[in-house]
Image 1 (cartoon, one colour):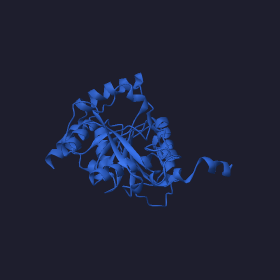
Image 2 (tube, one colour; image 1 turned 30 degrees about the vertical axis):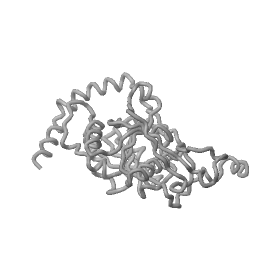
Image 3 (tube, rainbow, N blue to C red; image 1 turned 30 degrees about the horizontal axis):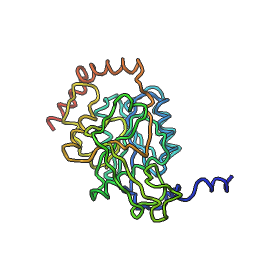
Image 4 (cartoon, helix red, strand yellow; image 1 turned 90 degrees about the vertical axis):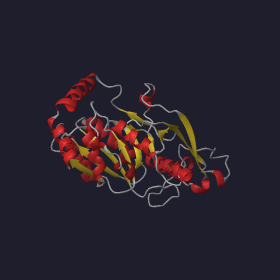
Length: 300
């Protein structure tokens, strides 16, 4: 079996976690998420992360006072894996404040991949793909500053994202290296060795990044002033962040090739629609702790 596997998995597809590659734009990667119940979906999400990441990472989870065994499940994973950092809120502070907590708890540098706890990655080596995508931006602009949304295949047909144009970002072999990825621009068997790792990132340029699954350098997330906004509806973090990044002139868009993920709770169940309806009224209108939080922030 080992000899047979070697025939179908040549060195061009292998990644050595101990090696440093030209495409490695960040030395540190943090995958972050906010959880509140939905234990089964969260567990499925995290299992896919560990199965398909392909590179070392830290998993940062902010839990909004889950009551369905989610915390115990997360603590068990943290004990087994060693790279899961859990922050427990004593009460559900809502999504916007939860995202702000993620922002403030993050390490000071590196790459952050934020995803909702009902996202399941289907592509192997998705962190390698992300590193290469930011490397392509670095080659084009001189720095890896961009915000990438990830393709959620079962949301696209509903128009949950838009791209005004598609930009091709080249990664020549001289600036690249193993493993060969979904960004490949040449036939591996026909290309000469000096072009075997020619790749290109297809970026669907957009001015709005949906908040369920996206990645950027940590400093770009740290710069988002969530606390200065009080949206009149549930959520609002993606609108705030997108408007802020657009004002800075940061390239934004969706990775059209290379990585595929799935939104496990889409289309939304009737239960979730009812919950969102309830929270839209409660969180934005009658959440007294939210109002006090805003007042405290104003007078600081």
